[in-house]
Each structure stands twice: as structure tokens, then as C-alpha cells.
Image 1 (tube, one colour):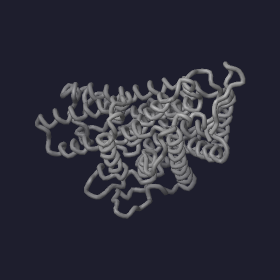
Image 2 (cartoon, rainbow, N blue to C red):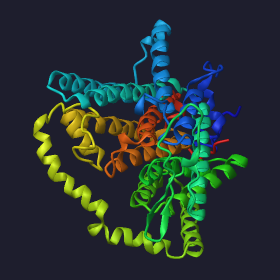
Image 3 (cartoon, rainbow, N blue to C red):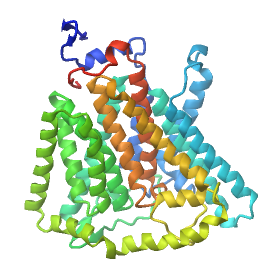
Image 4 (cartoon, rainbow, N blue to C red):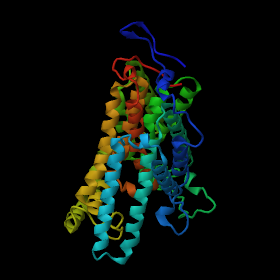
Length: 458
């Protein structure tokens, strides 16, 4: 294990990842830990097609949702059984914000059950509340369970590899015009069986294991900044693996045929510019140019299609449907503006809103919608506080902040709570931000100061 030494009292040499691990003494990994639990969660979330559920449970029967329930019960057991000294440890701001947000969901549910609710809204309301318990379980296990930077890095590498695999499936779908991911059958799980691909312009819109191209784009956009940061800051075989995954994810986003994919790509890169060095920015720039050139050469007309998607947005039917729904929003809002009508009760037969923020205002009221926004604002502010940490941690924090920002930003373009992968990533993103914040807070004073040279992840 490497220590931090100085050639002069005010000139530290290049730090290494091992130096950061000095803060982890006394917290060794023992068997099944939070990183392992979240690895299982991410694998279930990303690899299993979105429409596969346990029969009879509806959207509660998605394997990732069921695992989220297990995470919540595990967290509760841990809180009840931990030592008195650990109980006095202050929860992270993200934990408090997540509990407050779920509290607004419960408040809305209570008010919904007190009114004359139609019979077909009761079950969706029950399921909406239960799904939020699964959501909360993922946030809490990530926020309170990952205290080792090495375990966080292991988890992030696994997320990137899984996302890279899904991106490869998407690229193959695009190249062959053949649905691959959603054609997977899993014993014990039922699904719609719809394995068709959408088309935009002359090109198919791959989805891999997602239910829709927007969900697919969100999944990859959240993973891309993490993949890019790990590729730039890792070394050895890990560096090569992360570069391959980042290239696959970036290529898949360019071929997704979605405005959201391009926006997610841009939003995910911007926060990284604040922490990348000059050489790293050049590497990222050249990589981006190479990806665009590769698409231009191998897929003639694709860049023109992407350009037209933005130029013709004003007359696009999907955009028009979003703007027309604003009139319905204005009519429904006065019904219960502060606490809403209950999560999940605004059924598709009333109106489909391709905007999760509008849905939250209607279903959870202004209070619930503000609680949702506050959760991600708190998560991003927490990781912004990591800027004085060693570059290794600061870089990962920026990548996680970017992923969190992407997840919540793209929710403005579709009803993300209705799509299992998008909903699951909305739970995971703030939890990971809380984890890296907690790790940075636990660093000794000599590691928590600006001006430390760039370091690498082994």
C-alpha cells in the first residue's frame, strides 16, 4: 500500500488509489456487502427485458423491484441491529431527502384513499406506494452501505460492463434490423412478447432489453459519464476494458435515433469538463470526433437524420403530443394541487403525459414534485462538495453527478416512472452520489484539500 510523501513540505508527489485506501482500515469487506447487493440489482435491472415480471404482480413483479424490497428490509435490519455508536452516526443529506420524498408519496396516498377514488385507481395507487419502498431500499443501501472507495469502484466497473453489453446488443440490433434483447425468454417470468423494433426515418431504433428507445437511451446515458471517467482514470487491462465499454455506449447512443440520447450524451459530458485535465479533455474530444466520423462513414445518412430530428422538432408528432398535453394538465391540476391524487392513479385512459415532472405534480402535488427535485438537487450538491477531495474521488464524484443529472433531466421527455429501467436508475443514481460523498467526508484532513495532483484508479 502506497503512502503519500512529499519532496518538499508544500509539494506532494502524485497520489495513487492505494493512498486513498488508507482511510478504509477497519472496514474490510466481509462476504455479501452493499456493493454485491447492488451488483445483483443492476444485473436484474439492465439484463432482464423491461416487460418481464412475475405473473400476477404487475409492475411490482419486476425482478429488480423485488430485489429493491429485499434491499429495504436488509437496510431496516441493519439499522435495528447495529451498534449504539453507529446509530449516532448522522444520515447523509441524500438519505434524509429520499425519506422526505417517499413521505410525500405516503401523504398523497393517504389523501387519495380519503377521497371517492374510482375502483380501478386503487390497485395502481397501492402498487405505486409499494414501488417507492423498493426505490427507497436501493437509495438507502447505496447511501449507507458503501463506505469503501474500492468497493464503489468495483460496483461502477460492473455497471459499465453491463451497460457496455447492452450497448453491444443495441448496435447489433441496429446493424441487423433484428430484435435481440426483448426476444429473451426467462422461465418463471411473463411478458408481452412484443419484440418489434421502432423505426425513425430510414433507421431502426434499437432498444436491447428496454421497453422503449427512450428508456434505452436513458440507461446508456446514465452509464456513459461513469464509463468515460473510468476509462480516462484507470490503468492496465481495466483501462482497455473501460475504453471499449465507453466506445460501445457512445456509439449506441449515436445510433439510438433519439433526441434524448444526444441530449443525455451532452448533459453527461459537461460536468466532467470541470475535473478533467487538459490531456484528458483532448483524449475525450478526439474520441468523440472519431465516433462521429465512424458513424458518418459506416452509416451513411445517420448524421443527417440526427440533425433533422432537432431541426424538425417543432412539427414532430411526439413533440406536438407533449405540448398538447399541457392543456389537459391545466384542467387536472386544480383537482388536488398540493398533495396530488396519488402516485399511479393518473391512468393512461385519462391522458398520457410524456413528462414525469408534470405527472408528479398531478399525482403527488406541488409538495411531492418539489420533494422529487430536491432529492436530486441534494445529491448533486453533495458530490459538488467533493471537489476538494483527491482527484480520484473528485473525478468519480463528477461522473456520478453527471449520471444523476442525466437521469432526472431526461425524465422531462417521458414518463420515466412507467419504465422499469429508468425508474431503477433514478433510485440508484442519488444513492451512489451519497456513497461517494460519505467516502469523501471520511477522508483524513491531509487528503481533503485542493491542489493534489492527478491520480489513477488501479
